[in-house]
Image: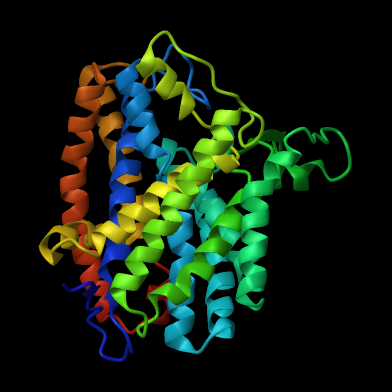
Length: 385
């Protein structure tokens, strides 16, 4: 069974791993659905964690989106190890990570923020997932020089231990801004009149990206594929088992304990109703546990099935920007055609998924075309897109 996809670059010593691109592509599609919800279903907001009165269909739709950030950040760390493996070790990876990390931070406050509202001077600037990934890459640029056991210890320590800091608040105290960036969603007033929202506290994502880098040696060309799949499934099941144990005890692992619902389905939904901002230990264990098992499964699928998803996973940043601009552009066009002042909204969750599927089609073809251009290009800056 094949598991690789040629990069089209004869200078590259190793082709891309298709299962990784396919999982990344699946994550991008789930993200597209969630962003379609934010653009075309904003009349029905969803809190974090989800409210007990959230309709089931909307609850499950939002739940699928929970896999996006943890899996993508884990794969970012894994991709950094693969980069190091191809280009000379940790020093090469660190050089790439700090450059692309800074690039993503700048991208967040420019093109990404503009994509959400087409406003050059929005009243609120949002620091979201692209910003968090950029800063996590900057942190990983330092951590890659550590021995693998130390990297694993740091990653696990952060992911499993950061909830011990949930009760720490330093509003109005020195260091408040740094703490807000690391662990607390906060809105800041900027001197020139805008406001700044820290939407993705950083600290847990550093742990996730470090674990992704530590996962890298399992994907070395010399490792037997069947052994890697067994390891991935075993690790995924262990993560899910620890999640169930922590969640069942209701003592530690998430800031919001679960409570019994009106029926079995309601209870089950509350059990998996986890905190994303910042991602709790339970949140990371549950999402990455499933993600690792799916990654192992993708290695067993025929190429023709994973190839469609791998197109999106091979150029995720291009897809990310494209779908944001397309969604907002469609909503703005709908306002003009319908003559309404506020956002255009679809009638129900089924229509939301249909709209997301319709948007995915042109995005897929555009991403495929861009991926081909990127693979043929010799420009150094194309590596950062």
